[in-house]
Picture 1: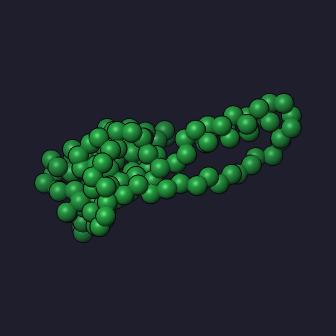
Picture 2: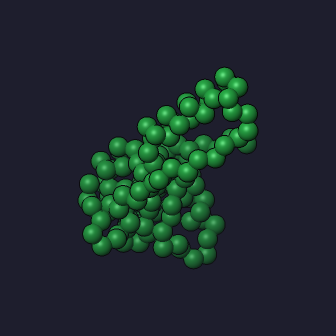
Length: 124
């Protein structure tokens, strides 16, 4: 089974989550921002107000998150650094300098916007 991390899968996922729960959650965090963006119309269709009824957060920090309404809270990852380190690891593997798998930890940051309902959250 292949995981889809798209706007349409976010819409489906929030529908399945809400249909399968007896008690509504206070908030949801999606695997990426695209899924969170896709969930917003489904929540509106079901009569939920974000963030008043349900807080929504994504993960990635893509630019569209500040353009939608409500602006989406997200965990921003350092995409350029992630790409740079991935290429470095690939080159090391291809040239024989690195054989064992390696884990690296990169710093992320939380960008609080309107969708979380947090005091002091940015509207953009």
